[in-house]
Length: 343
Image (cartoon, rainbow, N blue to C red; front, side, top):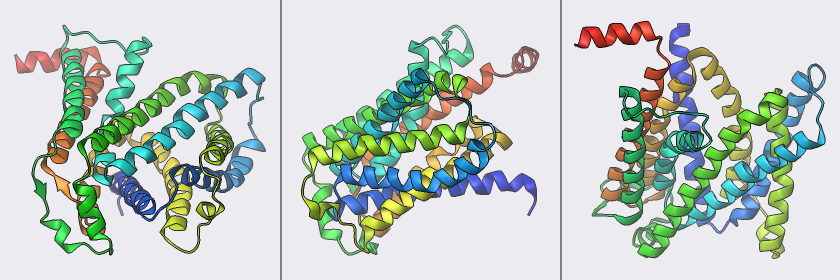
């Protein structure tokens, strides 16, 4: 296989892993899995999986000293971007669908840009072409979010007739869930992505003083395990809810802990090194496309016209912001040449 094709195949694999995460998480919750317990088990699995790699590759070699101030920052980051974000995401997923969860992830780059703009890490010049593109992207993201929350439209049930798993009737009921519950779920998913975006932005400050990326990720997973355990114990006291068994609950926990947190971390780092972060972000809509078809076929989810239109608006917003960012990063000489040729 030619090396030039590997990044494309790897990025497709990454988005497929995320699509499977949406589906497995939704299936686990539909089978009675408590969301808060799920997050605890997921983060504990991820911690156990990452510890040997962090010890072998960084702890024994170039591990920086961990000061009390840095530890407190990492503890706050873990709570904000992992514990709180995942707990809120799970509740939103229970209220809505795997398709909506996948759709809202497309607004993450836009949310991150907006937060970076508030913190003055990014700038927005509406007099430039790139600034207009980023502004259009933010507006498209807001429009898509509003469509997802307030407009359902007709049901598109063509694919859902061929569902594979056996709880289609339950999904038919969920397809007609109360509007108030759907809006609440959409809001929670967006709030989860906002916390995730804040985590990405604030992490840039922490990583300057603690540059060991793998060790930082492992430490955050460990701290989020403790935090999510405290939250789960406060919410759920029934011992039966903590039992996993050989079912979809265990599969979802192991998959999200190892594949999503462990494997995709390495794969994303590799893709960014080879092709850059914009290339990785450009592939985000693939997870939405995969989730739409898979959730209809495997889970029998009802796909609505509003979900499709809102998802398309979010994708447009994503690409507008990414295009504006890439144009800003072009050398000035290249921009002048491009504008001269277009004129």
